Image (cartoon, rainbow, N blue to C red):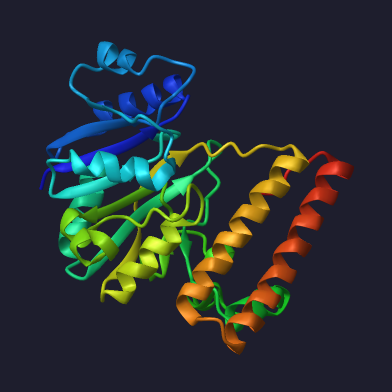
Length: 294
């Protein structure tokens, strides 16, 4: 089962090199290729990737088309039956690609799968997600009450921040930082490719939703762990812009799921209130205690 590892680079030469090195060092039990898509970087010469890693396929885009478009460009040149979308800021510490590919082969109904992602300090990143609904948003707001439930029951019901990543599970969507799927899945996706409507953020949720609509199931597997650095800016203004972008993309996805009716409007109101309150608390904690809540 050959795997095509697609890594999109934009002005992160050394970080991307660290990622490539970790793939080469730890991938042994499955044939693979590495495709680096440079999204018109302005700081480094992408040809340096070939000088350092002659075996990689280097695709130089004429524009920075964003995460989805960059990955689609890489997939066009992929020879593998299996695609792994791998963020440039990830580090493999074991043969995660082989483990994931073997698991994907076992899951006949699999759409997208991911593995356990952790920060550099080992903290789990909550990359197995449940889709937003009125029920889930209200239950999340009532989190202290949910904490009275047994952990496994609460985690299975809610996933997201309630889940510690300690068991394999079906989920509605998985993180695009490490996202594996059969290349044939694209035949069931709109326009036979990954949806490019978002430049960045929220595309992984949208793709997983589209796979589910086509009859597939998305999975989180705990069998292997990958470090995802994910150093978000601690500057309040940048955090606010990011929050607004993700909020707008989430609302567009909810509209895609539910239309523009009363359910959508109610869900949007609850979700917007919750996220703005959460951002206010995070900003307050950062300002007063100089501590960034993830």
